[in-house]
Amino acid sequence: MSYLDEGRRRDEQLLLIGASRPALLTACAALPDRDELLAGGRLDLQTTGDAYAGGSGLAPLEQVERYRAAVQEALGSGRTGLRVAADVTALIRDGRSGRRRLHAYEQLADVLMGAVPMTAVCLYDESVGAEELGPVAVLHPLQHLGDRQPQTHLSGRGPRLSLHGEVDLTEAEHVRTALVDVAGDGSGELVLDLSDLDFLDVAGGRALYGARRDLAARGIRLRLAGAPRHVRRCLGLFDLAVEPA
Amino acid sequence: MTFLRPTGNWDGTRLAHEGFIFSTDSEVVERVVPFVLEGFARGEPVLVVAGERVRSLLARHLGTDLGRLATFAAAETWWRGGHDTLLAYDRDLRDLRARAPSWRLAAEPVWLAREDGREWSRFEAVANRCLDAMPYYSLCLHDAQRLPTAVLTAVARSHPLTWAGAAPAPQPAYEDPIGFLRAVQPPWTGRPGGAVVDVVTAPVQARRAMSAALPGDRRARLGDVVLATHEIVVNALRGSAFAELATWTDGEAFVVEVTDAGPGLPDETLGYVPPDPVDGPRGMWLAWSLADDAAVRTGPAGTAVRLYFRR
Image (tube, rainbow over all chains, first blue to last red; front, side):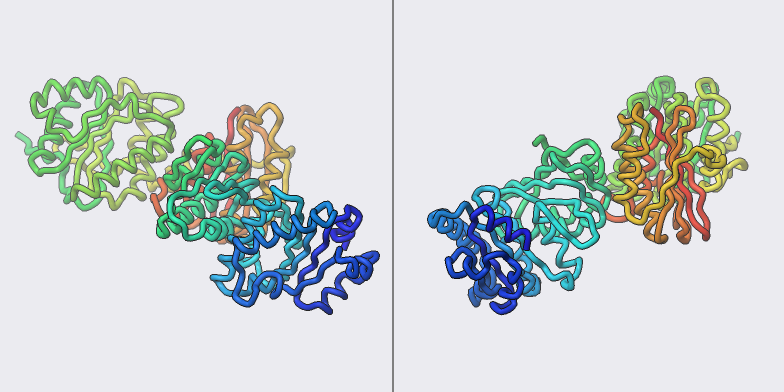
């Protein structure tokens, strides 16, 4: 609620997305001037199905463009930006292929939010489980994971991604899943910049080795660039070469 | 006249590991030349990696046969520290295995004469276990004029075969690799009273604890300390709900001790075993290669590992 209220004070367009309209109305009951914001079109409520799936499942590129357009529309109506709080738990429960689309989408959304005045909180029900939440979490620059400290962020644009923070055995497999999913099915190569990676352990090296193999099977060559000395040390244990950043 | 059998009863299916200590030129020639020629006669790749003295003796006595050696290399340039030297050696062995049913090697680890090369005896000892399935005869040459007595004693303790004059024979001083490692690792003295002790339940806590514990004048080793300790803590937490971390300085060395109450290490020699290129454990190998020295105590009631980092 404080997140939405901050947007209200900054005169941003507010968008709240969740399971049903009644549930959303209850969720934002404590927001000051809620009814006036709704009546004035400054607060919009949408169900997760309407906002994302459009009946046929999540389409990552179209979804990002929809948000880009929504930001333009908000700016056009005199708002300072777009602020979204979205419960997207339903999307992560959409099977393995749904999660692959979600991972690709989250990465594109991360890039979008670096480029336009948009902020978003993606809400995931904790009951989903760590195995599904882990790969999604590493695609967000800020993470709140109950009592667990976030360590890793996978970010970037197009064929060049970068890994920040620390990758150890607790997140190594999540990074592998996220990396392989955001690479999509395109051919060619993917450069992963490790210049800002502070720590990588043996499990992390093994995960990148596995990711390289998974990607190779899809015709994508994973190239690693710019790793600090101790990160290179773990990569070397798997014969993973590193080129200059 | 005695009938020479340069490799005795070796059948070419497993590692044979002989330590040969020489003083005179004729000892080298009489041992190594028949060994090389037997390899040629059996159609095996024959490799020689040795110091200048041995190389020039072989060059003189093998004549044109020198060109039949699969490798004839100077050992002086091979030393890159124990772990990296063994890793390169292990790759060469895997290549050989892919192209020959058996082979033989006469090698002189000249770096045993260096202070920082002494640790090689530990790799020699563990090789008897981890390279056992490699089908080659390793004739290790050691120059008694160049090497101190302690190194020559370690040669006998780490090589199961010795030369008996006409054929190789079991070395009476040979020790089980685990016993040898335990005997040569830093002595396990009591933890000093001033040690800083932490209890961790996740590896990230150990990384933060190491960052906090390493004294300011040793920060150049921070990356080594953090990564090596992390890997040992990861191992500890596989079989134990928590691990105890203790750190102290002992003269030149910063010492990290990781203690767990797990079921004991399945193989305490892994710090000296080159990892499989694809699968298998790597944590101990990595930790041991980052640290300057290491010691282990392990049993069914738990494991303690000490890593030593000099300035």
